[in-house]
Image (cartoon, helix red, strand yellow):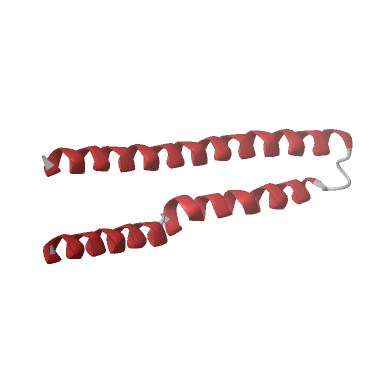
Length: 96
């Protein structure tokens, strides 16, 4: 019976991870399309002044943070705390 719950838990974690990755790729798509549009507008109407860099950097920083949250950080703290709580629960059950 425990195996069924573990499989279900693994599925839910995988689905949650997939949704985070999908949200990141949507963010990436929006960033690139907006940036290309802004670069086009800048170079079409005021080619002597390159103000599009403000948009590139201003939108790139949140994108970089989002990428770090999805691929680098990857809920390390959350996973560690969940395992800690499960170990405590297991220890309580062995004492009873």
